Amino acid sequence: MGRLCGRFIAIGVALLVGAAAGLAQVTPNQASGDPVEAGRARFNVRCAGCHGQDGLGGERAPAIGKGSQQGLDSEKTLRNLIQHGIAGRGMPAFSMPEPELEQVIAFVQSRVVPLSKTAIAGNAGRGEALFFGNGRCADCHMVWGRGSLNGPDLTEAAAKLTLAQVETALLHPMAHPGNGWQVATVRPASGQAIRAVFRRPLASFVQARCRAHRPGRGIDYAALERQH
Image 1 (tube, rainbow, N blue to C red):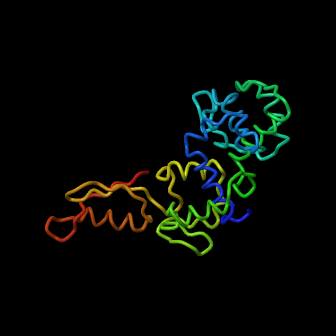
Image 2 (cartoon, rainbow, N blue to C red):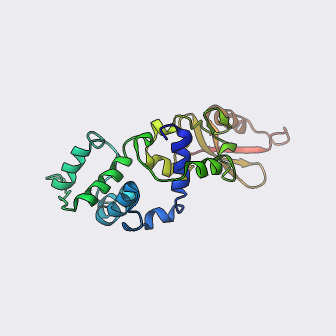
Image 3 (spheres, rainbow, N blue to C red):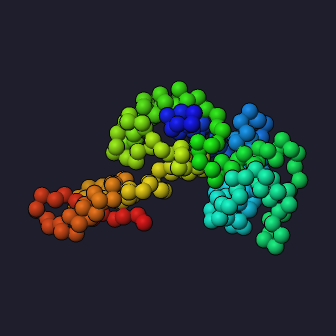
């Protein structure tokens, strides 16, 4: 499962893991068979008060992996950080049983290391069927030469993205469309506006045409607004 065909597609199912809400509501006992998910549940009980649900950032502390990530991929460093806290920066020390500590470490590492280095649960075969079948992911995305290039090529996603980034991409696809892509809203001269993902050169072309729009010239869109 080191290649995206296994890893990304497995996470597609594992994340549709109960689909967004399920991830945030899993209890430690329910997730005991999966270190990352068990760690997520433990983290959300102990750490979310500062770092936010799923470590995505809170009022008292930043998102896990935001800013300096130095040492966060090291189990030894994380173990020391959790057990001793950070003096003078408001992070207290935590005392927890060894099995729970290992689960929290597994979850925190999933926020900062590439997906290909994260042990996740999920049925790769079912994920592949969903990706290329009813999920219609392949209508836009390509994996190892199979699919479409209407959207970003995901072949190297497992080597470049963390589990947190893949979760965000699946749950909030318009948040960070990827390098070379632009989220924009096209407002026709008449009719309903359309929000979509464009290749950046195409977005620039459409925007230029919109600015040159003249009624009756056969151009049926009036504006393109980019999301920065």
